[in-house]
Length: 143
Image (cartoon, rainbow, N blue to C red; front, top):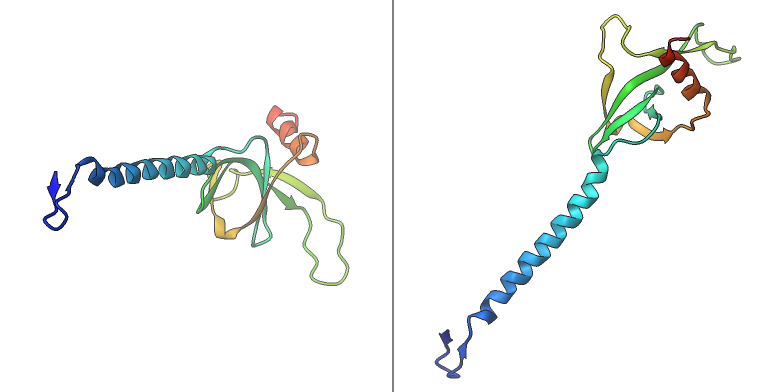
């Protein structure tokens, strides 16, 4: 107990410790909220996604992890045109092919870490979309 010489009052120890108890409870609650918010960042997204980048490229795959800084994409496909792109004027119809990432000259693995600053948006694809059907066809080996 502390004795105050002016009032003659002796404060019990419990009145000095309650602010610490309240502070600890508030910190525990705040960290619990923070962790519950953060856990949604790293959970994989269900199904197939289209990731649209700032350079115009679109990748299709499974978003395995989404953090404030990066998007981790696995089982990656992209669209490739068979003809030359026309500059300006009339646009010729293009033959598009869905290509599985990995057969390129530099031999990339089937995982891509994309900086979030280059991601415009991410869309989850419907099961009956043409891209998902093409991916399923490719995966089953019937191309």
